[in-house]
Image: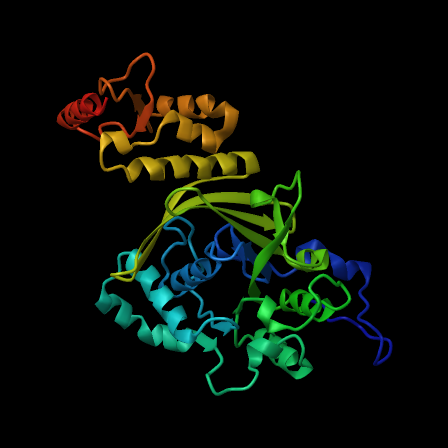
Length: 373
């Protein structure tokens, strides 16, 4: 690619029209197929405790192990991508615990996880404050010019291809609602996108009607922050279980909504992600996670009478719930039963998976229902 010419030492780069051919632009491949580009600044946005850090840990675990994200999207695992994870809120031990929980969720044994140790040692570096340390790089990355320059140099030189900042708010003391005050942040985001991949975890702010974002949530603070990013990754938690709807909104207006479920077992340190479906339509994406919510409620039922009712589905889908239930029944995903008879009837009220309970279990449930009257 042609280098920019400068008329004087202080003038900005100047390019001729012939030097601006889109075909000459360096290709921007994907780190995660169709979801996260190889270059760019990406905001991972959600309310507190919705899964931002867990998602970041899952992506890192996949990039280093070569496993697909959500068990579905392939990763660029053939390059020796080095990752810098800057912590501003949590300690480094939690990061490793999360990554190893994700690896267990992918079905890896303890021996296989241990064998990945040298690869993690080579490719992942974590910056975190020690108890007796003064303000660290995470606190000052935007407010101390030499620290911002250090990060840009590390990315532009190729030493690190991916940087994760978890999370954005504690990394500066600026007024988030002021575009002028936040200029060091937005400038760094734009500069980083030229050289590598940056993922910045951030909390949601205001909701506005008509937005195609998951839940209509924008990142907290000035809109310049949202304008500076290349991809916004919005997370919305479901009502039941670990259902999540994750929207990937790219600068070119391409959108992909991914419905997933998470299964966590703290006793064994396992976190598993299950891909449900994807869509490029926000309304369809919302339907996906609502369906996942309903299925989570069905799957957790231990007795027929603890199955969710049609009234529960109405709370999820709204007034058009009958249409959604009909589609799910037509697809053979669910069926409806009457508790009184244990069979499909004129007024089925309970929603279940086909064959979820045996005839004997329904007979016992019918008996309990009669005795309870």
